[in-house]
Each structure stands twice: as structure tokens, then as C-alpha cells.
Length: 155
Image (cartoon, helix red, strand yellow):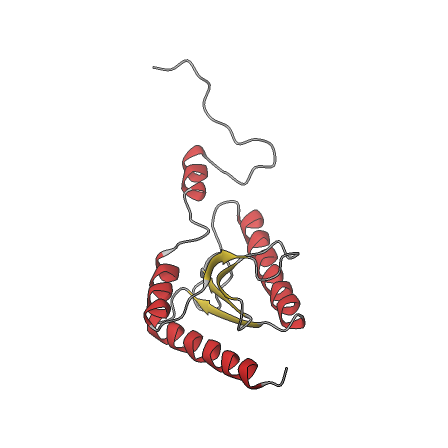
């Protein structure tokens, strides 16, 4: 047996227990299963992209897929972390902290969309529960359209 005192959350910590802290730290911010599946489908359609990249160098936010020449940024949002209207369920533990965090995430998402659109980017957002093949088809269609438009514009 250990003589260590039981784990306690630091003052102001979001972790309500050591187990909860481990669980939350294990959640991936990139390379989730929905992302990987959509990437595989988009790649199979012949499109190439950057993964987890900043669309704009001065914007400290990354998109899940970035198509630089076409100026398309793709985000695959998790239902919990981004407040999906269909699937978000407020937490029972430490609800004030987590609900505020999700609200901040949604506000940051809207701010990111506005900044990218102002810089001429097309922002595509999908929920993790959406059919991957439909997402990949829409991405391919929009990237192809934007590439064609940029090629036909006079220099």
C-alpha cells in the first residue's frame, strides 16, 4: 500500500477525480475515427490535403483538412465538444465548467469561420455522426469547383 495521500483536483481544476482526469486527457483532438475515414475517402477521390494545419499562418487554429490552393478548410466537429444540436447532452458532473467550455468552443468555431471567410476561404463543417461518404463527396465537389473557378479566372 502506498503512503501517498489520495489524489485531489487542484484549485479551479476541471477534473472531478483522477479517473475523470485520465479519461479526459485520453480524448483525441485529431486523428479521430470519423476524421480518418473521411480523409481516406477524400484521398481515394484523388484529392490531396494537409492534416491538422493552420489555414492562415497568423490564426492559431487548425482545420482537420486544408486544401490550400482551393482555399477550403474542413472541420469534423465532435458532437459533445462542439455542442451538436442533435446529440449534445450536458454533463452531470462539474456541469458549469463543461457547459461553459462547450459554449466557448462554439463561439471560437463561429469566429474561426468568420475570419477564414473574410480571407476568402470556404469553410466546411461536418458533425462526427454524419455519413462519411456524404461528407467526402461534398468536400470533393467543393474543392473541385473552387479549383476550376481559380483556373478560369484571368490572371
